Length: 320
Image 1 (cartoon, rainbow, N blue to C red):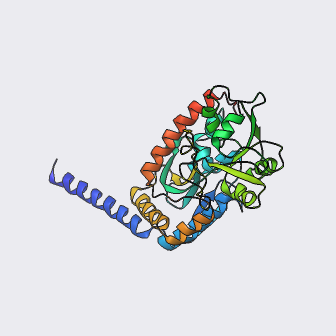
Image 2 (image 1 turned 180 degrees about the vertical axis):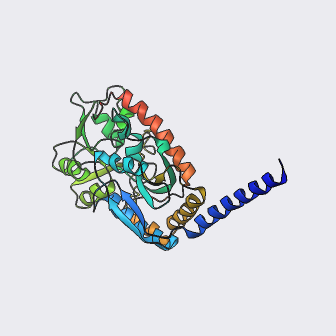
Image 3 (image 1 turned 90 degrees about the vertical axis):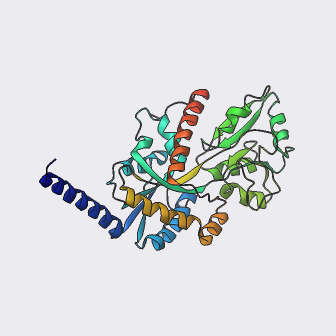
């Protein structure tokens, strides 16, 4: 290679480095859109708006929260996958939509590799309740009751709430009948009214009725006890190796420049460690874990495989 060619290569390389540095220095220079897969006022929306409020301070730019509902949480992710990967279009990614719902569609709306993940924003908790008048007081009682000829009914809104029953249903003699409801609150209300014998839902839906004495909390169905109800053990603590995992992550379209990714990920980590955010999440009965973008990517990919097995095992039909 002659001197002229070497000089030209040096200039091109230097210009590229300067452009990357300038990109990192200038980002963000305009408002950022943060899409949410569910409607205003719900747990995901409320959490997303608090997160956006604190992320604004870390990034130094305004963040506009936009609710993009539809297709059970997958429409928003489908649109995010097609957005320009410049850091100005982000989305709150529902673990369920990514790992479960998308696999139930005959034409997959997106692939996991269509996104770059920037961290886990929050993890849901779940509890199992029975009517206050029930003779069931713990998970052992619950499993024994399911061995009666009629079995036991449980109200859910779908996955991941119903996933523990794939394991519990393998216990000899047990029989569980699923009853689907449009919302978690509806399922818990049906339990309080003895229309079903149990419900597995988020604390936001069930705790008010636990406090009013309409239903009894018999187990936390995650790996941690439910905040404010630490006297009720987890399913694993009661001897049953079952749990429910669902979370929300922060995502951007694949192809996001590495420097921008690093900037958003660092800002996200600061929000997750902010006592104001941690305390707020406790009021929502959600947990905050400091999970990096790469680690959350692994969680989603592993979850996709696990959910695929669950769909086949339970013979769950396609949505379209």
